[in-house]
Structures are given as structure tokens and as C-alpha cells.
Length: 119
Image (cartoon, rainbow, N blue to C red; front, top):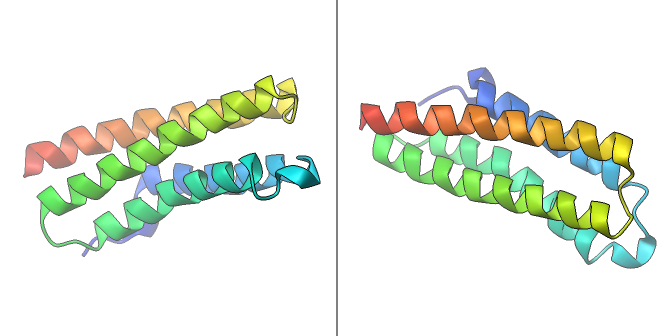
């Protein structure tokens, strides 16, 4: 079993989840069960799927959960885009969170490539 706390992609995903929670605190209250919930769920799903994959014994299963994490990360990136277009997320915080998401995506992609070579 891999220690997920040592996986850089997980560290970035964890930071992203915290950043998304911070950035969405100021979203309109009527969006609590809309965009706010969707973006928070997709962001936390990234880190959670990396953790679940790390607990799997085979590299194939690990890669499968990493691919799911990548899908959740893409979903998070879309919701960041949508929140910005709707005016819920100002440019400053949006740029910071989007940059973190981009960095996490690149790191996660590299991890997926490495794990697939292993399997």
C-alpha cells in the first residue's frame, strides 16, 4: 500500500480542495446547493480518488482511480470557469485557484503515465 501523504499529486489536490472551499465561501447563499456544492464535491473527489487508488494493490487499479481523479479535476476546472463567468469568483482568487488546478492536473497526468508504465 502506498502512503498517499507522500504523493505530490495528492498534496496538490488537497491544497486545491482547501483553496476551493476558501474561494467559495463568498458565493451567493442561493448557490449553496448549486454551483458551490458541485465545485466543492468535484475538488474533494480529486484527492479522495488518489487516496483510494493508492490503497489498491495492483498498478492497474491504481491507474484507474487516478484517471477518475483526473476526470474530477477537469470537472473542477469547468466549475471554476463557470463561477467566474457567473461573477461568483473574482479575477484574483480565480487566477490563483486555476493555477493550482493546472499544476495539479500536470502532476496527476505525469503520475498516471508513470503508473501505467508500471502495470
